[in-house]
Image (cartoon, rainbow, N blue to C red; front, top):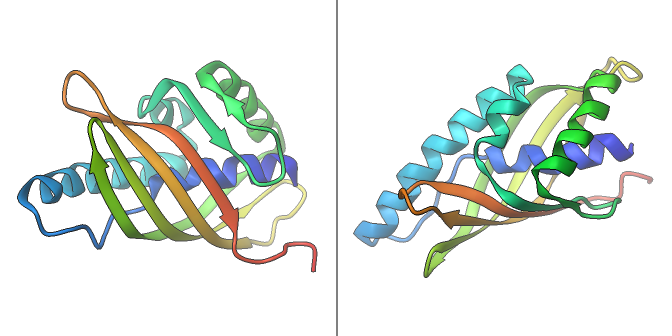
Length: 159
């Protein structure tokens, strides 16, 4: 369960960005993040974690629900090894941003998600849904990368 929850939250960064404010600059940011979201969703479904990490800041922090934070790309790479050992495969991913705002070089995104995956231990799809809060940081070249990923399940998986 630990490995599944770690990467459940990684997957959340690949959600399409919707429901953004109507200002021109915000529309441009929304389009950029939607494009990144599509690319990341495809990389996740293909198991291409190297591609996923190109959209993380070097000091990314991922806050999984049941585990300590993962701090930095190095720690994330170590967690990816465990995912590969467990043969976790994502089957589907969807989501929706419910609130988004920009402040300085950061974009704050709150939304909901749904996804399914299979593992070596559980070949039948396991479905999850929940909420997320992501912080995207604008880079000096104008691109955006994920700096913080915080997520939770909207149900108790132990009931």
